[in-house]
Each structure stands twice: as C-alpha cells, then as structure tokens.
Length: 187
Image (cartoon, rainbow, N blue to C red; front, side, top):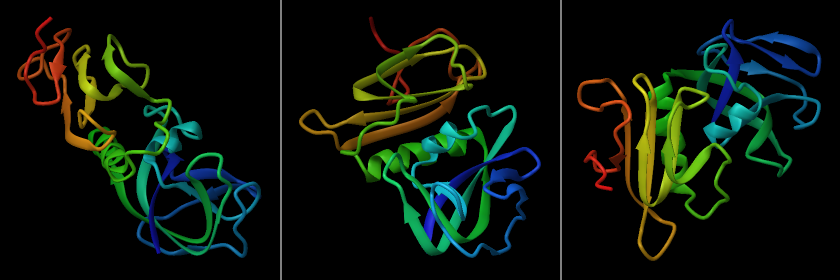
C-alpha cells in the first residue's frame, strides 16, 4: 500500500478512461487494470503534481489516498495508476501545502515541481498559495494567501526548516516579506 494524493471535482468525481467516475470516502474502490494512460485510479506521490490535472482550488478538492493492488508508473511526473484506491483524508489548502513541503523534504534531490518558486515569491498567487524553496526563502503576499517555505542547507539541497502560514492581516501582514522563521525580511 502506498500513500499518495488525488485531486477531484468538488463532487468527488473524476474523468477516467470509461468516462466520469464517482468516488466515495473511506471505501476501497477497485478496477481491473492499472495503466497511467488508460486504466486504473490515478493519483500522485507529490501532491503538487495533482495540480497538473485539477489546477483550481475553487473548483477542486484534494485527498490523501491509499493506493494498492497493481501499480503502474509512467515516469512523466509522480503520477501513478493503481487497481485499488481508498480516500483517506480531505486536505485544506494549508494541509495541502504542508504535505507538499514534507514531500520535498523527503525527496530533496528530485526535480522541483514548477509550482515551487526559487528563493522568493511576491504579489498575488494565481492559486491562492505560494511555495518558496531556497537557501534564504522569502515571500510577500496579500491577505488570504497561504505561504509554504522550505529552507535548504547552505551546502546541499536538504531541507533544514519549513513553515506554512496564512497571511491573516494580524500576525502575518499583507505585502510584508517574511522568512522561514516567521521574522520580517530585512531589505
């Protein structure tokens, strides 16, 4: 059994090779075959790769899933297909970002997803969140934005510190640059 991530339409449906499929929470679902191109239940090891298929948080929901049975990988990203799947936990945006950071921390040398900004991010995020990774990451964002930061070691890509916060207008102010330790960045 493998822990993975899956995006859905808000009504827990997805498009599959046979058309639209209705998923159910906390119930094992089964298919006959698994092939990333045509069959099986698709999910991703990296939660950020789900955004290639279900991009918009206002129209989609994301779950931690258990993938089991026959597993097929195609190598284009972390997408897999499996013959058995179970939806385990629906993720809030903050949880989704935290899981993405944990994935990066567990796999620091894998190619970084294109959603991750290098060293800094500022302004309005298209998807309502920023993820920034680097030696000294910083982020400036408007109120309501979820920010995830991963700081790398000085001499490697290993992650040594992470944070997730929401620009709330109280503790974290809009249009103020913050560092991974929660302190204001000094220009």
